[in-house]
Image 1 (spheres, rainbow, N blue to C red):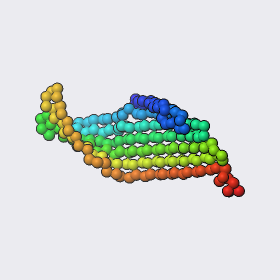
Image 2: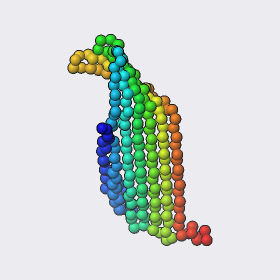
Image 3: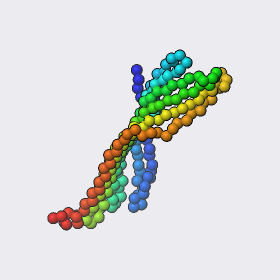
Image 4: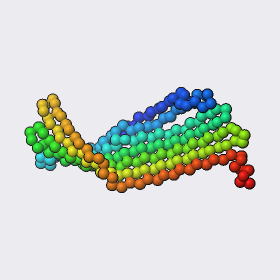
Length: 192
């Protein structure tokens, strides 16, 4: 049996901004994962081996909010998703009584997706509307190595030291889209 644990979060600000002297509240919610591992360990002779699948980060945020004043209406739609997944293994050995050394290597996948839509409606004469759309999708595979030492100084006291090299990018991709649209009665008359 396996599973993930998620934490629901909420953010609220009143006011977030003030438009034409009017307070505009903001409220958003989403989910974050509690880091969860699946680890297997083995011993072969004096060597200790391990394999792991780690889900250190998952974040999901969706929100729709509208701000209004006598002459302006703003609508904001947002959706953000961040995920991280680590696959790897490690090997360790006792190199002296009470002193062990090891190294782990992980292939990591980081992905991010963001979508936002912003609409401004100006109640003027003539009325005007502006819409801005933005979409971003990223995906990166990295290689990460971690080396460590562990010293069992006393049966009730152990000290560890680790060093992690910067990630080495294996492959990655990005897809970016942005668009802006403005319309007003003056523009409609010009088109005819």
